[in-house]
Amino acid sequence: MRIDELRAPLLVTWQLTRNCDLACLHCCTESAPGKRLPGELDADEAMQLVRGIIDHQVPYVMLCGGEPLVVPHFLVIAEALGAAGVQLKIETNGQRFDAQIAERLARLPVRSVQISLDADSEDVYRRQRPGGSLAKAHAACEAARAAGLPLEITFAPTRLNIDQIEAVIERARTLGAFRFNTGKLMRIGTAARLWNKLEPSTEQYRRMLDVLQRQATAIEDSMELCYLPFSIEDGLRRSFEEPPATMLVLPDGRVKVTAALPHVCADLRRQTLAEAWDAYRGAWRDLEVLAEVRHAIADASLHSRANNWKVLALANV
Image (tube, rainbow, N blue to C red; front, side):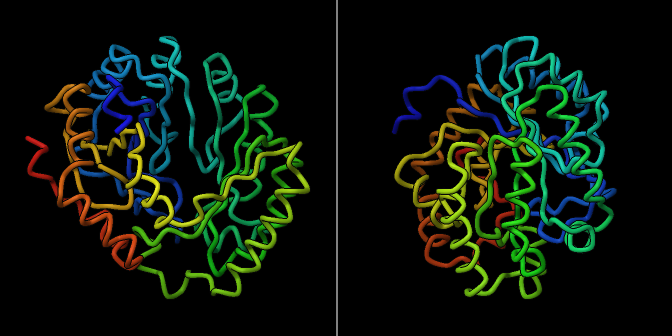
């Protein structure tokens, strides 16, 4: 495996918290207001992980959640990583992202600020993202671009909003986004519980793909349109063939093999980043993990178990 040649991951995706200021119907992490995970890393523990990332020369970190901006030490983490030259991606719903935050982030090596725009009308946005304001999300996009930050837009399709995707693509272009991300709705977390209400129909997905294919040709010079792999199953097939050089860190410091599976392979409270990386690479040889990947490719309903975390025997935690 190519990951055996690397002494550390190329990307750490760090879920800082399960707490969020919105209660989105499609949330794969089951985040919502007041849903902070028991045992989340405190500021000192988070900075210990920051030092591990810097010491092991991880080049790229994505800070996400929940909503990362509700974490009091979010900017401390971002600025410490940025000061060490670590490239950053910030994933946010945009409700708290303003000009002041944008200006501080603009001093750092930020590769992108990813903001979710899951509708192009306020009523549909609020239905899918209870507690949210589309106007605030748009203002966040404008603040990011005004500060010179690279803007990335993401769209999670559901039965509620999928027919607005073309309007959101055009909105993303107008707002100055360099990339638009989407794909099939993930049957994980809150979305899994509400699957019968949220899953788009086969016909809706067909129309969505028609839009994406048409727009990919029309806007290729102005904005990157990313929608492949389109489904979790497609992504798992790629990972099965070539495991990605990434590390997914949960809010309590544990490390998952992949978002679509329940397996935990390490604990950064008890292990160094190097030890966790060894455990991650070992997990992609573990017979239990490989069998679960095959099952999850064959049966999409199994994705709903992804948040029922299970510690692997090799985890040594």
